[in-house]
Every structure is written in structure tokens, then in C-alpha cells.
Length: 261
Image (cartoon, rainbow, N blue to C red):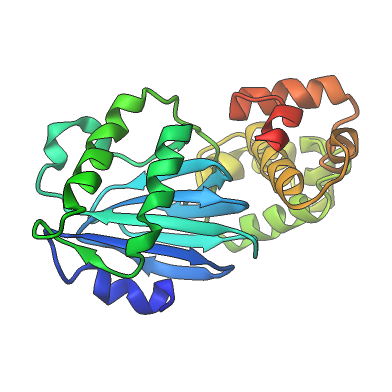
């Protein structure tokens, strides 16, 4: 059973934990659960869109989506396995962790615990089951991991003009893009372009461009075996060291270490 078909099933037993491990490349449209969602991304990349903001989740990271939060989920690489646990929410007020979206690097302990749950794939685990306490412990562990959240956020918009600009930036990401050159291409003033980014995306042109370049770089590192230097130039950097510094700023990891992990 795929994730889309499983959406009604997830909500059936409010006090249970629904387990689902799926290898896929697809778009799951806007939906929500009456449970909190813990998902570990293995071997690829995933994207979560909430309130016109797209959050990037690379391989070996996990995310938590609080119960009741409408979201779109896109799994962007065919090799990606999404290992998900949908938890009861009656104790979510016990820690702020459970009430906010978070994306974190997964510890080896958490990875092993999540992988262990694959034997219950497709099942609701209830208090009557012998393995329920294992899942209770896993949920309680999450706030104690003290992981630093990964804030890679790419704003989206319904504004048609802004969508054309974003597509242009994506198509030409390897070029020397500046506010001046992009404004000239669309035949509008730099001031108007700056205002458009702030009004439609609530972010500056330069910050959006930098974030877009990092998202494309993460995708290339995870999906290809291209050298880091090639990737740096492919996303518009002329200096590998500058690219590496920016990449670490976004991911808390150097590109070479990120690929090894």
C-alpha cells in the first residue's frame, strides 16, 4: 500500500502508532494527520511544503511534523526510502519539540531504532502489543537528542510573475546571476525586483538565490558522483572554498563530509 492510499488508514486508531516504510518518488498532495509524523529520509532527498515554505530534508536527516499541520510531501529521488512512524498525540504537550516542525540530523541510535520498526510495516501498533513500549521509548527519545535543526527553507508563491522569475533562476543557476542582470532580463527595475521578492516570498533576492543554489547543490551531491568542484561551478560559484563555506553555513557540514555520511 502506497502512502497516498494509506492516508485514511493513518488516522484510524488515534492512540496507536502506524508504521510505514516506503521506497518511492512521488508527490503526496496537501494532507494532514491526527498524529505526529516522524520520518527518516534514507538515500535521497525529501521536500515538505507548509504555508508556502518548502523545507529540504537530505538523506540521513529526520523530520517531525506535528499533528494537524497541513503539508505537501515530495520525495525527490527514486532511491529514497522514507521510514515513517505516525505517533499518538495525547502527550504532545509534554515537550515543545512535538508542537513544531523540525528537521534534524539522525543519530546512529535513532537510525537503528527506526530501521528496527520495519518488521511492523503497515501495521497499527497499540498498547496491547508487546512492541508498543519500544515505540513509546523512541518517541520520548526525540527531544533528548539535542540536535541542531536544519533551516533550509525555500519560499514558494502563487504569484505568476514570481513563479516565472524562480523558474528562470532554476534554469540558469550556474550563471552569474545578479539583481541587476535578472531585473534587466525581465525588463523591470532593480527596486521593483527587490520589492517583489520581499512581498511575494518575504526574503531578499540574494538570500533566495543563495538558498536555491544550496538546494541544487545538495541534490547533486546526493544524486550524482560529480566532484564537489564541478558541483560548485554548476550552481554558480567561482570559488570552491566560498561554496564550501556557504554549504557548511546551511548544513553544518562540509560538502565532502556530507557526501560521505
